[in-house]
Image (cartoon, rainbow, N blue to C red; front, side, top):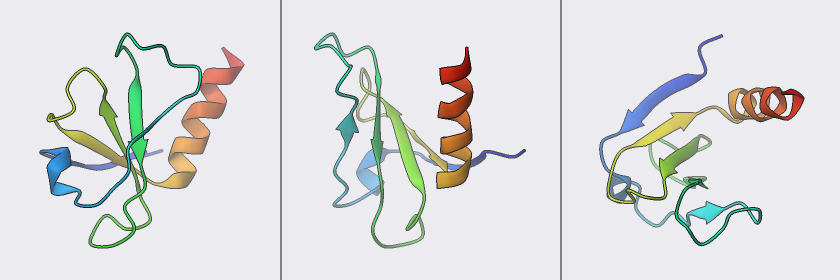
Length: 76
């Protein structure tokens, strides 16, 4: 399975996205944030970034690959 579809060098390249954190996250900035670009070349993919480095790179996943990943984490 090739889950990782690519990366965006800077999340600022994802114009107009709304980054979300899990409701289980604390205020300690030790989590990931996700966004769903609604237009452009990343439309339909899921962007994931490190909350400690919001200006850093974001990884792009297909919704199916992200669902498979989170399901696997829940099984651990």
